[in-house]
Image: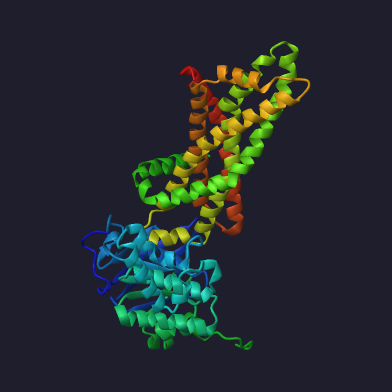
Length: 253
Length: 248
């Protein structure tokens, strides 16, 4: 980590310009453009297979675009070393906890591997972060012993340890019951209030998206249909947007 | 295939460059060493005991018939330490440990654990490949020495107890001592070290390349074991030629 690393309190802005990505003949992202303000919760919403998760992987450098650019604080992440200048964290859909390690070891992994603190300090930080997500009892458990919701909360705790300036959530409420989904949504909101971290959330959960977002981008088939505040997205006249927002179980619609 | 081979070389060179970080990963190296020993010691013992015995059964009566019974110790000793020990143990390790490595890393790739490491700026090669490769490179030569000794014992037991052979322990081991010199042991150790690097690199590479869920993990495990065994057998010939050139 370079000396120029910003403090956790300094959240960062993100700008995506003309992002394109294909896998074989299938074009997943077709020229994506949007901008995320520092400290805001930006929700990328859309049906399954619309390219949301692929977009998120580009933002954290796990995928390389075929064309287009991503800027963090105005610096292209394609430039060498830029990703090392910022603390970014991602909460994966499955939690992606290392199954061979306890929850405590998972949460402290970043600090342990980079030798940023002494073992005693790491233990204190791990306990503190687990307490924030209500998992202080699970420190010695293995991921296999946790429920889906607990895994996601442990993954959030692991992200918190990094004290990120930008945190990305991939489908944080998928496979969760409605109450647990609300708990996770509240965690996202609480985190923003506590640390002013910039959050980008990918989800197809309409309730969660409108509950936590400062702004929403709706993506379909690799194209952004609308980017606006929740109220304005609801009022958007685009037929595809309205179809996604209002689709229900009524057989006659 | 050539693409795979190129990627293997790149993975090996990246792991080799990260060797100075081994001390930092020592806990994982010890964990892996323990796992390798725990998983393979008993099997290695049984395998080499019976291979030594079978070797004796096949060659013993023929040599005794021609009045060469006193050379049995040397014949079995050299065969085991220069050829069968390293090859047999490497194949065992490919099946027992290489498959486990490919499955574990493969499942980490499929369930995004490796992506999670990358997002934390943790290099998967330093974290996953380096400790495994170092551990297997230490464990396999040690296992080969152990297997050689157990195999010699198996051979000696059959030589002494089989009425068609009837070579005493003392004759067997005196001859073995006369024929097997430290250079022969070194020959087996060099081979086993190279085979360990092959099994470790191939297995970790297959694990890292895994895509597509449980079926993908199964495919990676199969490829890791098959590719390792093929490479072990090809390299065994190449190494034998090279070592013969150096009089080993």
